[in-house]
Structure formats: structure tokens, C-alpha cells
Image (cartoon, rainbow, N blue to C red; front, side, top):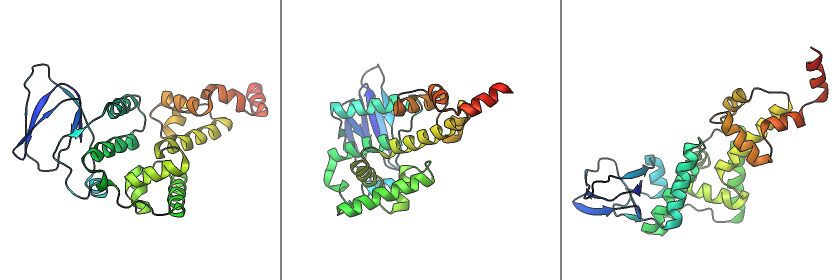
Length: 237
């Protein structure tokens, strides 16, 4: 799925021309022949989201639509926020999925409704199952969780947010932040190593997440949480 950020061009696929500009997105399916023409000389910039075949099957049940997908202003803002977070090294998998789903809903919302858990008890069990799996392995991606729980990624994401109050990606970051706090309280002062061990992009990413979760930097928390006996022992050596 491709979101146009800037410019205007014509795409021909399956013998049909479509004018594409920043108000629309479009899909490409494997093996599809296409041609692009640029009526203006300023070029264009686009964002591509790659969807695995099994994810497309779970979301759409077949080849993605060939018609341009309308992109409302709010959706375009979400698209650009996704890019900003990706540049900062954040986990954007779930946001990318939501972006794709919202664009597909503009073509046929009813096709995205299959597989939704039918009862509140089923919703809670699904969210709890996801939390349990993430507690065991926070590195599990949304598609991996969905396969483990035998649901579509889209519906897992929606149910998890409804039941827990935040996204799977945010929950993953919260688990990492808690693990970081535990190690910081235990005297771990190598923040770069800590970031690498816990799956953060780098030390700066660790600092941003911990500050967002707690209101304090890892360094400040290390000073506040350190065991005075450990500090005294270290000072005496």
C-alpha cells in the first residue's frame, strides 16, 4: 500500500489509468504490471507499507483493491506521524497496520469486519492472552501474536486497545520500561547496554520511553532508586 506525500502522477494498472496525488493511496498486488507517467516536472514522494500475504488474507480475503483509496486529512496526519516516529526509531508496526486498515475501510468497510470476537468474555480472554504472550516475550510482533491467538492482526489490535486502553505497541514499550526500571533499581548503570538488551533502538530511545512512562530520565531514576548500601559500598572501594 502506497501513500502519496507530495506530487502528482498517473498510474496505469490492468489497463486502467488513475491520477494519484496526496489525497489518495493505492495498492499494488504481486505480479501486477504497472506504468507511471509524471505530467509535472517536480517529481513525487510516497510512503510504502509492505503487507505480508497472510496479513492481506486475514484483512481483506484476497487481492487488494485496484481503485485509489481516499485519504482524509486526519488519515494523512496519521501517515506523517507514522513517518516521524519511524525516523526516531520507534516501533511503528501497529500504527502502520492501523493506517492500512483505515485506508482499506474507505474501499469496503464490511470486508474488515470478519473474525471479530462476539462476546465481552471473548474480548477479555483475547486481550489477556496477548498480555500473557507479551510478558513471556515482549519482542513478539503483532502478526506473531495474532497467529499465536488464531485471530487477525487487525482485530487483535482493536480488541486489545478496547480492553487494555492502549495499543499492543504501547504495551510492549511499557513492559520494556518496567524491565529497565527493575535493572536500574538493581544498580545497572550501563544505559547503552541496557537499551540493547531490552530491545530499544538506542540509549536515546530508552530515555524517551522511560521519561514518557515515568516523567523522569533513567539517570534521575537511577539516583532515586539506588540502594544506599550499594552506593556506600561502591564509594568505599
